[in-house]
Every structure is written in C-alpha cells, then in structure tokens.
Amino acid sequence: MKRLCAFAVCWVFASAVLCHAQSPHLAAGAAYFRQGDFDHALIEFREAQAESPRDATIMNLIGITETKLGQIDEANAEYRQSIAADPNLLAPHKNLAVNYLASARYSDAEDQLKQALKLNSTDPFLHAYLASLYIATSRDEEAVQQLDLAGSLIESDPTLLYGMAMACLRLHQDEKALHLIATGEQKSFFNIEQEYQLALLLTGHKNFVEATERFRQIVKAAPDSWSAKEDLAISLLNGNQQQQAIPVLEELVRERSADSNAWALLGSAYELSGNNEKSLDAYRAAVTADPENPDRYLDYARLLMDLDRYGEATQIIQAGIGHTADPYALNIRKGSIQMLQGKCAEARVTFQNAIQQHPEISLGYYALAQCDLKDGRAQEAEAVLKDALAKSPGDAKIDFLYGVVLSQLGKKDQAIDAMKRSIARDSHVAESHYQLGMLLEEDGQLQQAKNEFEQAIGFAPSHANAFYQLSKIYGRLGDKASAEKMAHRTQELLAQARANALEQQKTMLSDLKSPSQQ
Image 1 (cartoon, rainbow, N blue to C red):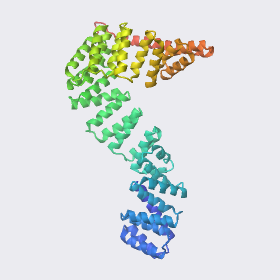
Image 2 (image 1 turned 30 degrees about the vertical axis):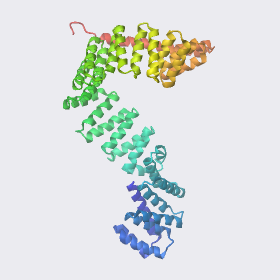
Image 3 (image 1 turned 180 degrees about the vertical axis):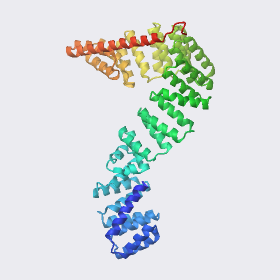
Image 4 (image 1 turned 45 degrees about the vertical axis):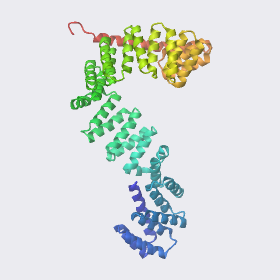
C-alpha cells in the first residue's frame, strides 16, 4: 500500500510543478520537497497559496506535504478544500482516499475512490487502492474484480499481492491465485506464515500438489521446524504421495521417538504403500508412545481386522479399554470384531455397555441395531432405534437404518417417512435415495421413485442396482428407449464389477507363497 501511495504522490507533485513553473515560491517549495525538507517546502507552498488562494492544485500540494510531515488531519482538510475549489481535479480525491485508507476509514476512502473513478475510470492506482480496501474489508469478490484493472501494480506490492491471492483462493479461482502466488514467490514476497496460510487454503480445495509445494517452501525456509516437516508429510499423504512422505516421517520419528502422532502418520504411509508389517510396527509404536489415546489402538486394530487377524485385534482393543479413560469407541470396535466373528450375543452385550457409557451418542444404538438385524431380530432393532431417536435425535444414519428395519417389518408408510427424514438431514447419500426409491416403487409412486433412483445415480454413478431399477420403471412408464439404455448401463457396470473382482482375486493369489517360500 505504501509503495502505491508513493507512486501517486510523485505523479501529482510532478504535474503540479509543471503547471505552475511561473511561481518562484512553488519552484522553491518543489526543490525543498525533493530534498526531503518538508518544513521549508510547506512554508514556500503557503507563500504560493497566498499569491493564488483559490488554486486547487496548490492546496493539494500543501496536503501532500502535510501528509509527509504526519499532519494528517490538516492534510485532509487541504484535500477537501482542493476538491471544493475544483471537483474535477483527480489528485486530491486520490490522496484523500489514501489517507483514509491508512486510517482505516474505509467507507470514506471508498467514497473518494469512486468519485475519482468518475473522473478517470482507467487509472490503475485507483483500482489498486480499491482492491486493497476490499481485501481489508473482506469483500473478496469485489477485490478480485479490480485485479485486471489494476494492471501490474498489484503484482509489485507484497501485501496487496498476498491479499489478492488469498481472495482468489477463497473464491475458488485457483488459476488466478496460482499465477499471483508464483509471482510473489519469484520476488520472495511471502514470509513463512503467509506460505502456511496459502497452503491451508489450497489443502481445503484439495489441491494437494500445490499445497505440498508451499509446505516444501516452508521446510526449506525453516529446516529445523518439526511442525513444518509434519505438515509436509500430511500434505504428501493427502496427495497420495506416500513414498515421498515415508522418509520425512522416518526422520521425524528418529528425532522424536515419543511422538505418537508421527508414528501414526508413518503407519498410515506404510499402509498406503502396501507394507502392512511395517505399518503394524508403526501403529504399535504409536500405542506405546501414547497408551491413553484410544485412537492409537483403533488404528492398530483396524489394520489387524483388515488382515483378518481378529484375535490380535481383540487383544489390542482390550488393552486399550484397560488404559483409556473413555473406552466408548474401543467398545464399539470390540463389538464390531465380535460381529465379524459371528459372536452376535457377545457383541450385543458390548454395544449395550457402550450405550450405557454414552447414551447421548447415536453410534452405539446404530451398532446394536445392526447386530440385531444380522441376528434376525428386526423387532429388537426397531426398539433400539426408537430409543436412539428419543435420546439422540437428528442423526441421518439412525433414520436410514430405522427405515430399513421398518421396511423389513412391513411398515412401509413409516419406513418411507424415516427415509425422507434421513435424506432431509443428509441429502448426499446415494443409498438413502436408492432405498427410498425402492419403497416408493413398491408403493406404486413410480415418478417419485424414478426421481430418487436418478439422485442415487447422481451421487454414485456406478450404482448398478439403481440403473436396474430405473430400467424397470422406464419400462412400466412406456419409455422403451430409456429402459433399454438403463438396462445396457446395468450390464456394463455388472461386467465391470466382475472384472474388478477377478483382478482382485488374481492379486490375492499372486501374493500367496508356498510353504518353502515362507
């Protein structure tokens, strides 16, 4: 902002001297001004004003000099008098706006800038000042509108360029933002905190490649920063660059072997890279480093479950229950393992214990109801979900499962209402739309069912069952062409699913080793 103001002052000053070269006092004042002797410059400009008391340009020059002397109130008064003497003179509007901006008088500054734009709508300085004002007042859209109009002035001012880049990112105009960021980095405009804020916004937009580059810049600028390296590793993991994240995280755990978060991240990196044994070692180290944190046990047990090592997973979870102050999540996981092992009665007891610990949390009810459903106890599941709706209302997943249970019990109207409530609370779940579509189709509401199946496909384009149901509905509605199209897409998706399953089976078989190789 200061750099832009300086440009404007030089332009106004030079123009004024050229237009009034016949005045000795004005020429003397100009000479003192250039030397930085603002006190004597002001004296000479006052003498020039005495000769021409209504000269708006001289008033403006006095305002500039008083601004240099820090006499802001006096300067603003001179600018206002200059504007009153000649409303069509651009300079005092601009200089008054600059002083208002510096004093955070944004409304007054905006008024002066807009008046100035009526006199010269193409002045890039005015657009740059407006951009700065809009950024300062969190008006991103209006700020970005000034970007092209301000020309290169924004790219020459570090503060303004950074603010504009952030505004573009907040508006999801990443291409403009990345151009500004590249310019700022080439000129070394940004400090570490600014690079960090840029990286956070890029991460929020899931632009992990560019976010990672910013985190790399931070690590380069602060190579001893532990948090900078951790942020870089997380960004690499978000961008599916686990092979690059692994050495960063390995260095971190060497430096701080008691940091459980670093071990957990390393476990994730190993797991994503397919190295399950190293991942288990890392998760085990995370548990050792922070034995009171239930998340560490959950990570460890989850991978063991994925590997069908349920006995070990149960042991880990049981150990966590004995070490953590609030074992609610661990009990839910324990019950899930018991369900996978077919121990529904034991799982039911575990879930009930979890519900007693936190009756206000819906997850326990959901898990218990699923357990009852798996065990063929739909009426018991209905009772559990009714209890959940009374004690923990407002959960879309509870309403969804309640709808499934009611449907199994033949309570179609109530099931439809439950599914509609679930969708009202979370409309982006494909399966909710699909299940509601099935209920509506069964009820003869074909058009409404068609709409639900179409929404399911919108959220899950590979939902073969939804395509199949649509083909049936189009057939019943007499739209043969659409019915055939939906049926063809169903066959394509089923063939693709079969191919994927065969590929996974081949991969599993190729990983098997003979006893002599183990």
